Image (cartoon, rainbow, N blue to C red; front, side):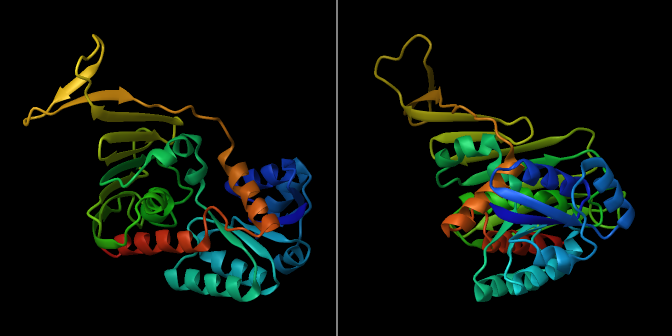
Length: 319
């Protein structure tokens, strides 16, 4: 079992602590939190071991799970890597692309592994359709959330939209050609609602909308490709796959047939895969343990996290 320690015991940090504690692949050694009062409450409520400094915690573990505010990701990761520890780091990977590049260089120099917490990659609805997404040419995403003061220290692009940026980059095998975007700060000092259009060199276009001042929650992505439409509801963990094929010469009474202007007939059918329920955060943590133990590439690499941040930064720079 890998000895693991958590930096940061806020809302998400507590979830990581609980899951690492119950995982058969980790031995939870303890945690560090910059707020002594919060740390005391966590110890009293859950009984986890508290370390009074980042360095003493890092020294005691094999894997450092960084769930601190984004501004401190770089310093925490750097300390852990320089001591030869593997790092799991929440999204966004760091505050700047330059910091992310430095982290990647350090990981290579110290021969340790790193994974970024882009948890939607492990959403069961996305996993169910991942292999069916082939060369999408138009993608539309909506990630809307009701207002919550937590997370408003960064623009909505880094808070919410970055999830969809990472998903899109993972399925579009082409460099970004052009980005246009707009964002509006409504209740925060940084944009609370944003829209971005990403054009790729292969012709694919992605249109992303993110809001943290919505009246309802929504996390939906639609992929359009040759002869197929794929919809993923990340919130409800549902998916839909609608495909087209050449219509049979003698269609059945219940077959859905479309005919275009040229007279070509297509049959529409549903190819909805089964969704296997999982705990996405536990899965991302445990697959990282597998990558360490088998010396294989993590599912969400530091490169992936850096590229998602790079695109997010390009979007923010348009505001």
